Length: 232
Image (cartoon, rainbow, N blue to C red; front, side, top):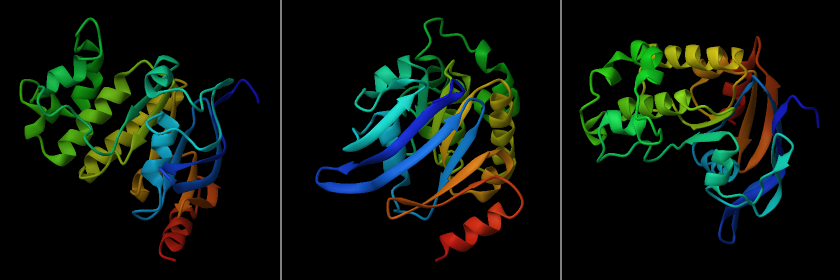
C-alpha cells in the first residue's frame, strides 16, 4: 500500500446479527479523492458506511485507515485517528441549538471556524439560537454537513448529505467538497443524487444487494451508466 492511500477496504462483510448485508466490498481511496457509493434504496449503502465508520463491526474483511488496521476499532477511536462521520438518520442533536450543534465537540466553542460555511449557507447562520429540532429536514442536513466539513479530520464519511436539500445548496456542498479535496482532504459519501456525484466525485461505486456491481472513475457518461444500472 502506498503512502497516498488513506482508506482501504478489503472484502469487507457485515450486517445485523445473523443477517449479512454487505458481501465482500473492496475499495481504495487516496488522499484528496472523493469516492461515492450509490444505488437504490435498501441495497445496503447505510450499512456499508456504518461498518466503515465503526458504528457496526464487520464480520469479515479488513478496514485500514492509512496503514493502520481499524477493522474492529470503535467509532471514537477512528475519530481520533482522523475519520469523521455524518449519519443519515438523526444527523443533529434536536434539543440543542444550532450553535451548540456546531460547537459541542470543540473545546473553545468558537464559531469562527464556520465563517466561510455560514456565508455559503446563511440560513444556518440566521438560526444559531434556534433549537435544531425545529429546522426542516434539509436544513438539518446542511447543519450536519457544515459540522463535518469544519472538523479537522483527513477523511469525511457522509451518508445521504443531500436528502431534502435544495439544488442550489447541493451545488454549494459540491463546492465545499471540491475545495476540501484540493486541500488534501478525502471523502467517502453515500449518495443517490447524481448531480452531486457528477460535480464532486473522483470515482463511484454502485451497490446492489450488498455487492458492488459497477465501479468507474468520474467522467463523460458516468451519470448515464449509473442511471441505467440503477433501473435494472
